[in-house]
Amino acid sequence: MNTYDVIIIGAGAAGLMCAVQAGKRGRTVLVLDHAQKVGEKIRISGGGRCNFTNLHVSPENFLSENPHFCVSALSRYTPADFIALVDAHGIAWHEKTLGQLFCDGPAQQIIDMLLAEAGEAGVTIQSATAINGVTKKADGFHLDTDHGAYNSRSLVVACGGPSIPKIGATGFGYDIARQFGLNVITPRAGLVGLTFDDDLCAAMKKLAGVSQDVSVSCGKARFREALLFTHRGLSGPAILQISSYWSKGQEIAIDLAPGVDVFALLKDAKQRQPKQSPASVLADLLPKRLARAMAGETNAPDQQQRLADIPDRKLQELARTINDWRVTPKGSEGYRSAEVTVGGVDTNELSSKTFEARKMPGLYFIGEVTDVTGHLGGFNFQWAWASGFAAGGVV
Figure 1 (cartoon, rainbow, N blue to C red):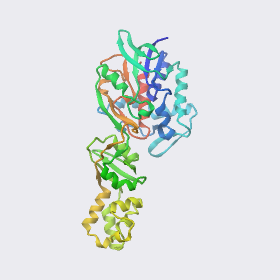
Figure 2: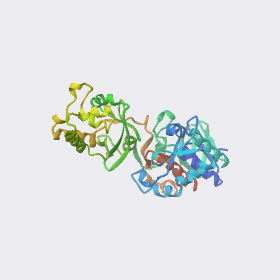
Figure 3: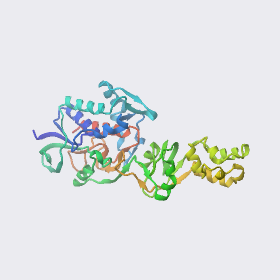
Figure 4: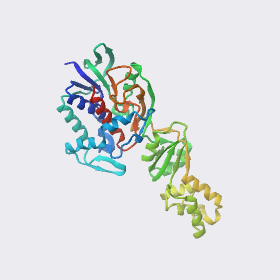
């Protein structure tokens, strides 16, 4: 049979969830994916354990040019709903920091769960299928593929964005949107490491591998999590979070000792232990390598200044460097290592209830392909589940 009620492009989290819901409603459903294996992003997520949702999901955890768009879907399919599904399949899980939920075992369990649900709902899934073209006809949509032609009344685009191209990610969904006259918010890499220019990179190279709990901000966005120095710049959860808000040329501010008045600390140490070096005082707050680098010291004893010999204004400058370190990244690590894509199909073009394109009845866009991007920590998966559930209930 080459004619279906619903064809879904993309066998990832959103596509499979949508397929399950539509199949349960008695729709004939075909899911097409160009990759050899389905759900690859699920499989590699969370270090292979799949951070499948977060206990603290709210609209504030999502970026979009249209920030109210996500409210409806998130309220109709909650983390508790997905946890109930996971529990029903006997998948053990645990909570890490900040409400993040992970499988105890491999992420493949989540894929197997979705495939089992799809099987019970009578869904047909076909991988390793390249789509050569999509056309609109009077009775629906026509898809030309390397496995033949397929027709459907409804077409759901759930093929994500171009982040992590090594698993087959592309911008194909945007091409379909543009083909049918929908606006696409310029995509860019999100949840990604930031890179330094050559001079700063050379100066900071000795800090590669050093981690520190920080508060980082860009514009009005602020996150307090761990930062990691790398050979090319900065990474770690705090930087991944702020990267989704950062644009090329923008400055970011980093407090390396959040909650601590570093100048007051140094000034007090100067009075009590004037022979101490700034780095030795800072080592109580920061890893030793980072403390020495910020204080401009080396291991050589003759280069270690005494606090007694340093004017207060110099200590203020040092404290400002730690409490308010300003840096302008050269760029990001790009799509190759970005966990998500920021931007995508303009949600002003879609119904927030059904995800149907206003200009093209029968055409739907869900998941990462839309201009809705979650914070790090399971939020993007919850968006996939919620948007897939919403569209699956109407297609």
